[in-house]
Image (cartoon, rainbow, N blue to C red; front, side, top):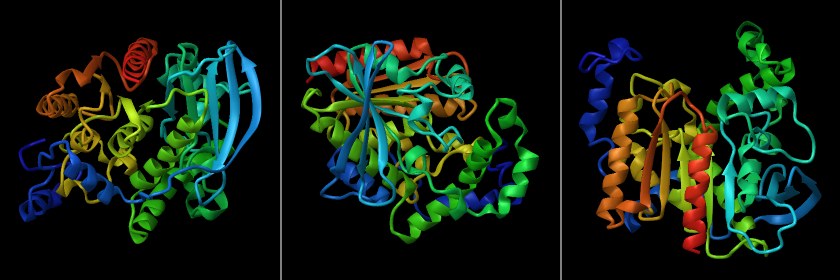
Length: 382
C-alpha cells in the first residue's frame, strides 16, 4: 500500500484521513474501571441478571473417557440454548471450569459440534473441519481429559441459536449455486452449505437490527456467553471463584469479549483473533465478523485495549505467523500493546503472547500449551 492509498477504497482513500481528522482514532486506552465501563457501554446488552433460565439436563453419556451432559436453558429470548458439559469420566471431585467457545468459520449451521464430540458420531465433514483447524481432534474433549469441567455452549446465530433459513433473504439463494463449489468439495451437504452461505449474508442484517436496538452483535454474543459462564459456576462439580475460557478465531473473539466484560473469567486464551484494528485496513476487513468490529469502539481504543481492559486478569494470546486473516505487523503491534498494558498494571507476567508458524489454526501443539497455561492459572489461583 502506498502512503495514504487503500486498494479497497480506491478513489475514496482520502475518506480514511477525513474520518481521522474529526477526532483521534483508536487512542491508547489503558486498563481500569473507566475503560471497562466504556467497553460495556459501547458493546451494550449488559443486564443486572444474566443467569440462565429454565435449565434442563436433557441427556447424559460416557464416551472415550469423557462423561457428558446435554444441557439447555433460556437466555430470555429466542429458542433454547444448547450446550454440552464434558469432564473426565469417573471423577467425582470438583474441577476447574472452562468455557470452550466454538469458532465462526463461516459455518453457522453447527456451533458446539465444531469443537466437541457429544453422544453421537458427527458427519465426516466435521472431522475434516477438525483436521483443517484443530489438529484433527475435538479439542474440548481433550481439554476435559486434562481434568477440567468444560462447557461448550452454542451462541447467538449458531447451532441451536441459529436463525431459521426461511426468515433470511433467500433472494440470494441463486448466487449460492455459482459460489458453492469449495464447500461441496469438502463433502458438506448442499442444504448445509447453502444455509451457511445465506447466514453469512444475514449477519449484516442482524448487525443493522443491533444498531436499531441500541446494541452490537459483539454485545449480544458476549451476553449469551456470560449466561453460559454463570451456568458453569452454578454447578456443584465446578470449583468456585471463577473459570477460564478459550477459543479459536470467532471463538477467540468471544474469549476476548468475555475477558473484557465478565469479572468471573480468571484466565482467558485468545487464539487466532488478535491484531490492531489498524492492521486490518486494506488487508482483511471484509472477511471479519461484526463481533470483531463493534461499532463506535474506534473512538475510544483499539481491539487489544478492549481485551485488556480487565488487566492484570491473566491472558494468553496465540498468534499464527501466516494467518491469512491478519498481517504479521498487525499481530506484532497488538502483542506489544498488550504487553505494555500488563506492564502498566504492574503484572507483566500475567500476559503471554505466543507466535507459531503456519496458517490460521489451533493445532495440538498450541492446545497443549494453552491447556497447561489454563491448568496453571486455574488450579493455582482459585
